[in-house]
Image (tube, rainbow, N blue to C red; front, side, top):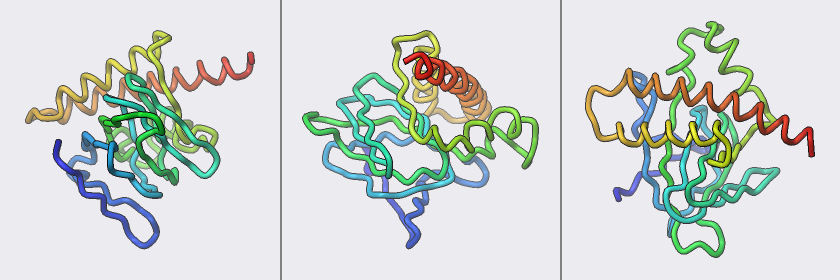
Length: 185
């Protein structure tokens, strides 16, 4: 597994390796077994999958434990820190990072106003753990696997954008499902 450079400026903004203005998406296979990703934030959104072991994500308000086989969403502009979870011997993530402009296009487009902004501006959704225990979670994880399969192919940009769009719609449904579940408990 190739080591991905972590580049951070004086404001703790991570400059994500592989993100370009020509195609603002990248996929990282990160081994967090020995590495810690320090406190950082960025405009890009993360659709990630715990490929091996368990991962701990800390924000200012919460600590999230993501187990092997679970997916997780990290919203834009969320200050977080990632590392191997205590008690786990390994921690590898498949991270799909993209700037919202890839799906939104023009500022204030229908894509932004109807779909992206309700998620990106929802400060109560900083990190969302997604499990296969329901059909929406299972679909989201399947889409992440499909994205991972495309990672090493050429001429994949349209397919990636389409899968990310499907994943976003699935994420919106998952957020609603989890909010309904919280209201019932």
